[in-house]
Every structure is written in C-alpha cells, then in structure tokens.
Length: 108
Image 1 (cartoon, helix red, strand yellow):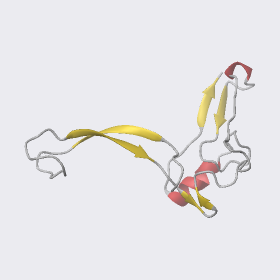
Image 2 (cartoon, helix red, strand yellow):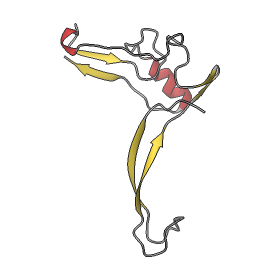
Image 3 (cartoon, helix red, strand yellow):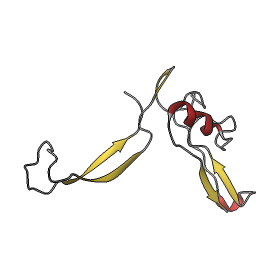
C-alpha cells in the first residue's frame, strides 16, 4: 500500500434526485469524506522517489527568523534537486502527471 501524502476533508452535497448508497430519498445527503492522495513510483510505493531514502523519516527544521530571503520556496513534490528547497521541478512533474502541486512559500 502507498504511503499517505496528505489528508483533508471535503463536504459533499448530493442533489435530491441522486441515489446515494446508505441514504434513502428525501433524507439529507450531506457527509464528510476523508481523502488521501497516494502514488506509486518505479521503485515501489510512496511519494518520495529518491530523496534521503536511507533515513527512516525525512524531516527538516527551519527557523523562519533565520531565513536569508523574505520569501523562501520549499519543495512539496519530492522532485527538487535542491531539496528541501524548491527548484521548480514540480512544473515538469505536473505536466507529466496532471498533478497541481506547487511549493510551500515561507515568509520571513
């Protein structure tokens, strides 16, 4: 099974005419569903294709007050050659996969 990349919650509302399993007609058709993005890579399952794979968990700590630039982009696609900083590799990744990932921007 692939490793979770992110999780979130979305509110879904179904039109009254739509059959929804577990709900009868005329009942409220609202609920919350948990969403988890997963990916498979050539080397197995997971989002991270090659960055610091020898580590049990890739963790980076940055003190915002010590940043040299007023706005610093951090990689979220795991393809950056300058990880943890973004080098724009997400553009190629997005075109190839139809994804929409972009950097995390940290303001000083």
